[in-house]
Image (tube, rainbow, N blue to C red; front, top):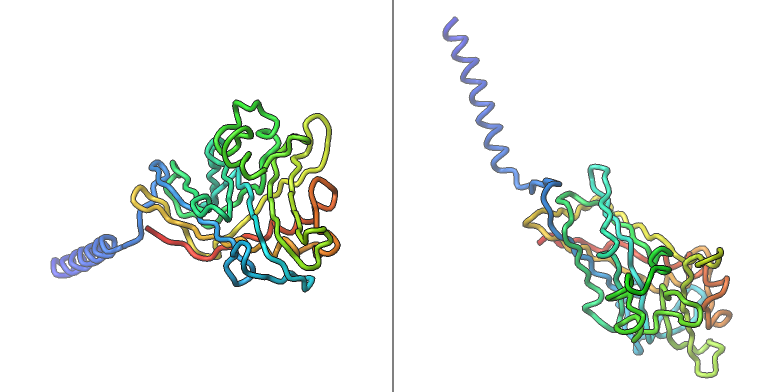
Length: 273
């Protein structure tokens, strides 16, 4: 009886010791939502499988039209991170407005601090500026949203004649453009109206990480590399022809372009630092 008991005790001890070793050798980082870390996003503007280069390289849209791009700017706001456990972290609004500019490399990398530790599997964000912030007092629209100074004013990302932000600005040249100088202009905005319902081109982009995880801990600050494909501006639910629509601003057709570019974002890779 003693021998049998000793054998059982030894087997149990061995099993527990093995479990302890496995636990000690587990390299998976511990994510405790009570702790905070940071996450970075890089927006890499491309045209199909090619890097976007301003004023030099020629690209072809879905309508078979050649074009170059001279300017590309767009607002990213209202960011939400999807956690593997089913929860969502909403970035506080005051920390959730960014202007991505192809001409300014540092604007294409954004950092979000005070993110609960977790395993994030997707992200969603608005392309544009929400109505609440758009109609708020100018004192609530500082930094990247300041319409008097800074990038918003420098880049012409605000309509003073029809108060509101331009969500996406894309300009370039094309031999088929009907303008006298061969240029095309897409200035897309419209937040839904201040006192009455008007054009609303705010759009929510959703990017799933496809099984990959951006793991945030106090020690790990991952970088999520996103691609933004400008060819999608011309294709999707509506094929946009430069010849037929070389200048689109505050008009009904702009909703078609917004419906297209909401799908221009995709995951390239994730760096885990």
